[in-house]
Amino acid sequence: MRDRCRDKRHRLSEEDEHVVAMAQAGSVDVSRTVDGNIHLAISGDFDYALSLQVNEALNEGNPNDDVDVVLDLSGVTFMDSTGIRVLTLLRSAVQAAGHELRLTASSPTVYRVLEVTGLLEQFDVPKPVSDDPVSY
Image 1 (spheres, rainbow, N blue to C red):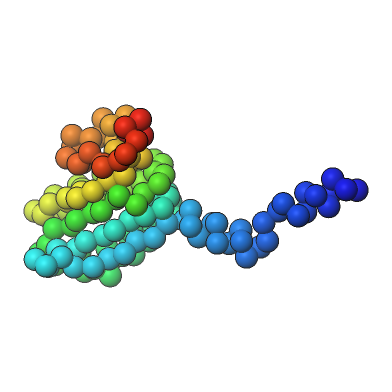
Image 2 (tube, rainbow, N blue to C red; image 1 turned 180 degrees about the vertical axis):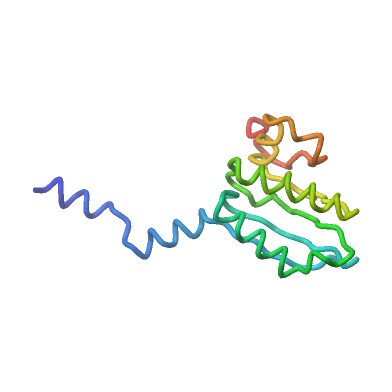
């Protein structure tokens, strides 16, 4: 009986679980650069759920404009195959429209995923600034 009580004390409340889930879920902030390009700052887990937010943000950013797309991935803490797919499809779509997809910053996680998949050179990703050289 004591073990059950002890286990209950160490469980997260529903509110705390929601906060943890939202922190992991990630976010997308869309804005315009000084020269009018679409700027997306992506943070958290770059997975299926976040890919939907990226798509929505691009639609809000009016991708039909004659502009480039700039991505800041320095806040990404996790990226699965969906994140990779979004990046490759976005790059293809932007290039097909005669524009450029630029990655201005990446996290050690993004850098490593693109390095392992052989996509690092295709995206010309800057090496992340980190105090921990083992992280990338």
